[in-house]
Length: 415
Length: 160
Image 1: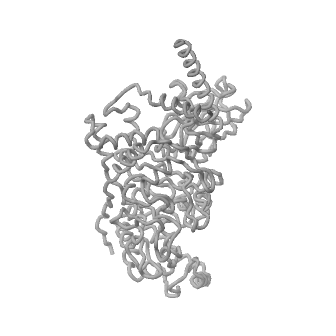
Image 2 (image 1 turned 180 degrees about the vertical axis):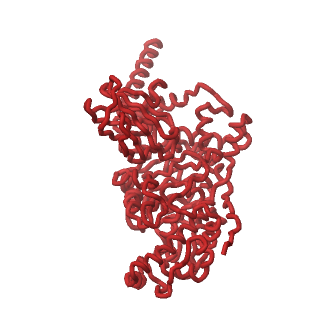
Image 3 (image 1 turned 135 degrees about the vertical axis):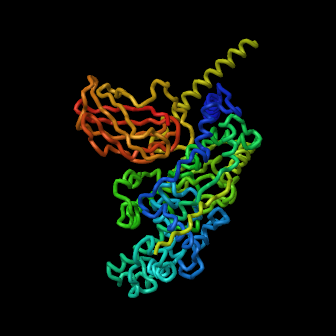
């Protein structure tokens, strides 16, 4: 009986919401039109400056960063580059559940497009800039698996002129071993500990600059217009673009901004609030317990390369994201970053560890809203019908468009 | 007989409606504020006249507060907001302790950051930094003010 009353209550609620007075262009109310416009790529602000990275918008840095991004010498076995998992022809991801570098990681590879606009990077947001993010995998034993000393040597041997033009004279690395760094590998770690503070700083500075150059390249990787954007452009220009989207896709869009509650997290031109939420996605049994943002928020505050660190080019007042960060709340337990939904249909499998193989699996999860294994899921069952889930999926497929890399201008050589 | 049935039906309809309303209200209360819920809570949006940056009286009438964002408030942006606090007679309240809370009543979630007063500008003006609203729509922005007139709270309704 209580269930029936509750169902009745929900029905009444939906009926009220569904009572739409105006029927604007394309059958949308003016409020809905405004919401659609806010999700259009045309509404995307110009790329914000990155105060932590002095060379972020230097085309020479982007050029160097692009070459480093594809360079497999930046790895323990000479076979792994950033591009191994962030494959340019697959939207800068790899299409597999758990990324493979020199070993297998515990996370799904994240796409790169639009990431320069995200205050926090990685699924748990444990980094606060693109360059700090890029340095993580380089020293991870299962990703690139190498050491910062090794990378500094690669720069000195293969990229010295380009590097020095941007960052000044390279340090003397003749007394620095080939492999040394604060990493899991014992030999490399003890070699690192044997170095003087000045030597460690010299090496770390080159390592940091590798990250800053890679970030200058990654900043240029952006989404381009999808069919959804063309549809909205048609609506807002007064020429309803009904033929651009099918009836099912439009029905899916109505659900997306309505009963399916997707826009609570997937809002704005990139379809993400860039926040962190626990949506009860089941952990993979074979992986260690992972607390997501709860651990990530603490980690970023003590990160060696964060906005407040001496390696950052920002002044302390520019580090507002760290200053006003939420930490320690139980809502952060197993909360993960809200990914952009742009090009989502092109990058199965889904979630932080690739737990769901298809979009249909993802939507089924949101519809059922199972309890979280750890922490509390914020989801409530949507109770959508099968046809509605198919419509939502059809809509999500309209969000695919090209991924563009604005090519850096040819490097100016001033030597 | 038919009439009786109709009356019975309409009575039952009314009862279901009433019970439904109560259930919705109860389920809303059960939604703890800290507990973010990705689903509507059914909170009713206030009248248009209740929205805006103020001047707005505190719940107990001790203070009148006015917000002044450094830039127009927009979703997903880190913002700085100045608040002017006066008493009911319009005198500036200095040296007040102000804490900030907020959220979306219709969604049951709070603010994604921990904003706080970073500067006491003087003349009853305080600078609040670290304000972010992670989506468009109706937000509550609540200031708990502890000043010379006592403790009171003022809640602004903002439309992002």
